[in-house]
Length: 375
Image (tube, rainbow, N blue to C red; front, top):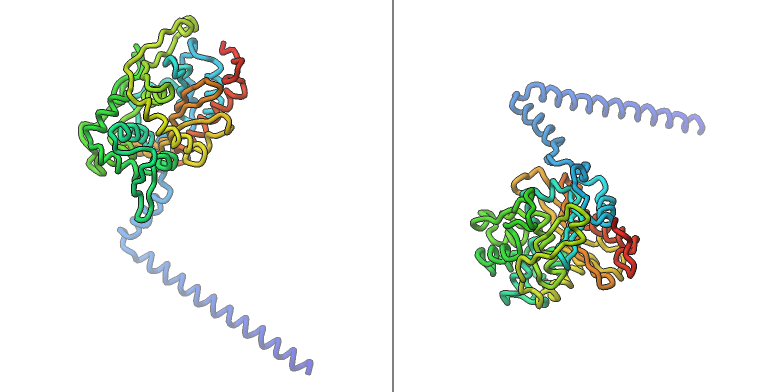
């Protein structure tokens, strides 16, 4: 009996060895056929294979994600407490942070002034603030107006701002029409310099006609055709924070200039009645929407709007925007962040930078009864 078991085991082992050898031979033959076929492929086919491999490793982003964003800045007239908070929050990112006192238009700090003064970038979804205010003022929507954004889905203004829904604001833009969108954009400071007597500043621009692809809806959902500067966005958000006064932004060169700064009004915007309609969506963005990274303390609310896209003029540049203001103990500050770089850059990341600015200032008791000295 034992001999039979041993014989059967030996037979099984021998059979398994033959099976393995057969499998190896079959696979070897298959590989050989593939190699032979590849050798005899036309050169054009092999070139396509090589081209495909190169595309796989191709990096489409031309702008560095990280850089020294403080080089060359002039800071003698800035609020140094805000400056420190902004520089620390921005860290190694390639971007700019603009902070404004919305009660005067004073630029408290501009981190990376070279970028902030440039000719502008596509505003991405931050343009939805313009579309929202324009739609409200024209009577096309209110806070509770539900618009269809999918086959079975509708959304109101608050949710659309918080979630940054493109279909909602494309619909608003198409209902407004190109002339109205351009009219309100200019009224809110786009296409013109935001600062008072700042020779280095450039003015961005508005398109002469609707975008060829997507029309007005692409303007009011993605900012297509528009170039926006961080200073222009800061000016608009400043007006929203203070109830409708669009100030000329002023960047003091010395502490004496800062101490004697006289606010300069560019124009009054008739938006005070619409700000309460927009604020819930901007607060929703930081509580549960696209700007959740900005939130750090439920008792110190932040109102903001993110933006994410690749710049149409420079497709190799990915953009992350966040325009915001806060309200703490009766004190407000506007913080605008623009990040440029590669794939890791987006609006949520920019909102996280802004949130760190607010948090840093809060830890210094900047918004409390006793303000930390800024000099």
